[in-house]
Length: 272
Ligand SMILES: C[S@@+](CC[C@H](N)C(=O)[O-])C[C@H]1O[C@@H](n2cnc3c(N)ncnc32)[C@H](O)[C@@H]1O
Image 1 (cartoon, rainbow, N blue to C red):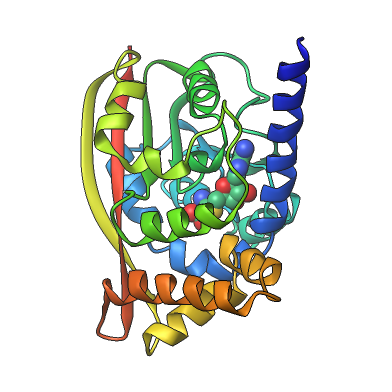
Image 2 (tube, rainbow, N blue to C red; image 1 turned 90 degrees about the vertical axis):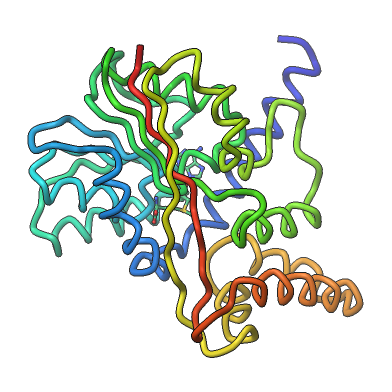
């Protein structure tokens, strides 16, 4: 390993340690992202008895929704606190799902062990898209289905993530912005050599909040990158004002009927 590789490896490891902090309280959003899960399960075409892997499962909302159909599901996630909550959720559901703490860039499963590999706003947050994708495809059986939901760069969550990214440290050279997973052209380039019958679709979830300020408050105090960013620049009032104005603008463009509208991209393909 060269000195450069060593440095790159260290930064990627730090990014992942930071991700565990950023996502640790995502259980606060489980009822929100949980509303997308039935749509993603349906889009993926999961059947009873399919062996399914949910990547970046968080608190297990997608995994458990698939298990309710009779699928044999495993959920994996990087963040230990979320895996704990996913196990608790499986008790509440009364369903048996295996939840495993691991990194999508190094999945602890045999080759070709799943009929379906799915992810809902999960694998897109692994820093190296080619590594995450090759692992997801490795554990998928030939003719198996890969399906995922991601945030398009030009719509609310993509814009929100890009604003947050602007204030953070630059990405190391092997990492790419998560929102590229929401761009049909980029996704096609990444995945089409390995899958057939590639299909795209869109769907929507809505976050309740009485005003733009209330919605911003949810992101400032809740899970995800904004809370940490606000803490980091809390002694820089001008920067803080600019950041809040940018966030307000991105929210107001998608605010209607006391809700924030969040449209996402759905991708599905069959492994060649
Ligand atoms: C926006 S949350 C989505 C969680 C869940 N899929 C849902 O829809 O509620 C992103 C998730 O990706 C997970 N994640 C981030 N990087 C990961 C990695 N390298 N490997 C596995 N999971 C990862 C986070 O821990 C977090 O649970």
